[in-house]
Amino acid sequence: MERLTSPRVMEALLKKHGFTMNKRFGQNFLTDENIVRKIVDAAHIQPTDVVLEIGPGIGTMTRELCDRAQTVLAVEIDDKLIPILKETLADKDNCRLIHGDILELDMVEELKKIDASSFKVVANLPYYITTPIIMGLLEKDLPLESITVMIQKEVAQRITASPGGKDYGALTVACGYYTRSELAFIVPATVFYPRPKVDSAVIHLEVLSGERMGNKEKKAFFTVVKAAFGNRRKTLLNSLSNNLSLEKEEVRQLLQLAGVEEGRRAETLSFEEFHSLAMAYGQITW
Ligand code: SAM
Image (cartoon, rainbow, N blue to C red; front, side, top):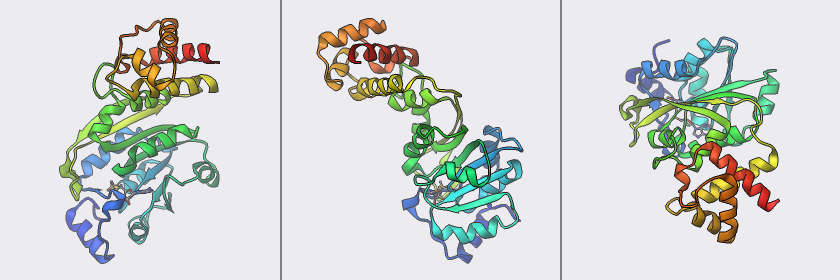
């Protein structure tokens, strides 16, 4: 089969099926074979892996994934793309095409059907639902090994930020709870059809094994993180007393217990300091 990244091939395929892009679904298809390979390289796929691809589009990256993985589950919401995918993936018998919404998919059920015990996610994500997709996957306690996805550059910088900068926020810390993250590479808008208004980046998230905290501790952790970043320009003393409905004296006690100075702002706190804060919050509220 000719390369689906070729504008001529893509145009002919879309025309043949009378397909027009649907902005509502965040459709920007890849037109650069090297980028497709680089994304799949960044995912470190092994021949025994099960891969979940979210939004296969016309199947460009799906074909590359099928060549490298044992099984590919490709979940596409747009019914108009299904006949196209059936054609472009006809020769890939290790691909299971699922017509549906990734936010509604029961991944445990899908894994059961193919008798798989773990999976990796690889995708060029629809940007309008980047955060719900990533957080949905991480929060569901699935046997997920890693997530390698192309997303909007600004969101990639927020997820992989270090403490101390403007990009570091609740999303960074939430992803840091579940994964070790890295920004693999930046992708210019010129490699998509149609071209998005923003640049993109590929991130690789390696899911950490085992529970990091008990249930109560975890709840306290996310409550404290949300409260601390609720007013990110304010000091911790002010943001925590506003958003946790605590008296300033109680917050002082909490910060002292955690060994964190009251004049600091949320964006300067490391993961470990948030953890200490959560433990202290647990002590004064439980
Ligand atoms: N993988 C293709 C590529 O790289 O050329 C297409 C990527 S495009 C940025 C995003 C894809 O996700 C589109 O095919 C779109 O129809 C699909 N999509 C959008 N929302 C979805 C959802 N909720 N569930 C599953 N697929 C979705």
